[in-house]
Image 1 (cartoon, rainbow, N blue to C red):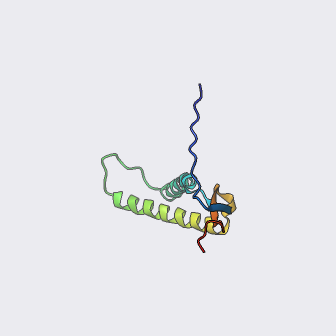
Image 2: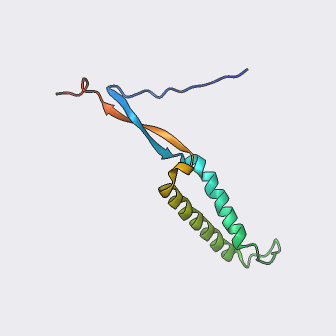
Image 3: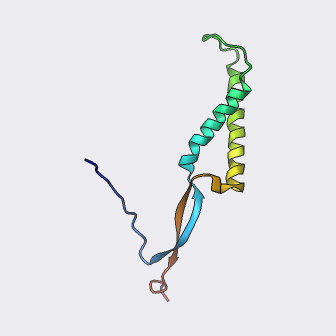
Amino acid sequence: MTIRLSFAYPRPIGIDVGGFQQHPDWPKIGPSLLIASCLILAIHTARWPARSPDSTASDVELDREIDHAVHVAGRVLARLVAKEPSIFPDKKRPWYVANDDDVPK
């Protein structure tokens, strides 16, 4: 048995959809940022010596590398979204136009 729920978003009275704008779908891009950050971190720390579980000596250095990896991945993602938005999932958002009948004169 399948139950489908659909929620209709009411359209404002006196306003018609004039068209749609394409915008990046940020909730779908989030996992890409996470994966990119992890890959950058893995590459930067690949040659580090193994640590014992009770060692906290290089936690500060690891935190610095994590911050750097997130920063680099964020900059790359921002540049790609600005220059090539078509390679990311996008969402259509309507823009509205007021009807002449409903505008007071």
